[in-house]
Length: 307
Image (tube, rainbow, N blue to C red):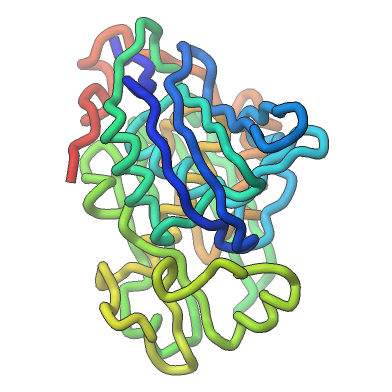
């Protein structure tokens, strides 16, 4: 049987929010079967639990934000991506501010934290949301076109194509495909960092965004080149970060997915629209478990490989 997973023990991290610039402490705790992933704002006068779900997403400007009542948690996608990549089903996340720390700008630090705490199998079947009919969302035409699609697939694979009119980006691979059952998430995807342009920084900061961003937690580019002294971690790091984000955005649905995701110039908003479009059509998906490992997609019965 493919079983649910949580942590063996708690683990902690301290950092700053990418957009808020606030210091924040994060504590990742084991959770019982069928809990899902639940963020808890412990800095509020009365702590508030915010369970992860597609409907809980309240803002998708530059990041994925979930909320419950007036309580919010911003920029959850990198931690969610790490949970997806490692197959973590149940987790409680205590947080002391309204934004998840950016750490190094990728999911690698979260992978390290989760693996350091240890991953424990639980006595409950892992429940997958299996896409059985294609779902697509589209926006714009011509050069403004963007789209995202889910199609049936016995496993979980993602492909993403980006298009930026920038010399540094154009010099790299702009289309990436990754199959979770056959690849190594920690090695191939998790280290890809978020990226931005110096020309946008002042505009963002005037709107109270990117206050905690810098060369130590993002790829930063001027009009012609990458400014980070150590360059890129992957030859196609920009496109791989979009895969990383998409894995995190889609895991907000609350269950691991069996599907083929493909996208062109999509982002947090469109990824959430895709989830909502899927959930709005109950005949487009079902919930499945695997009593026998042999019936599960390749690689899904094993714990994720380390670095």
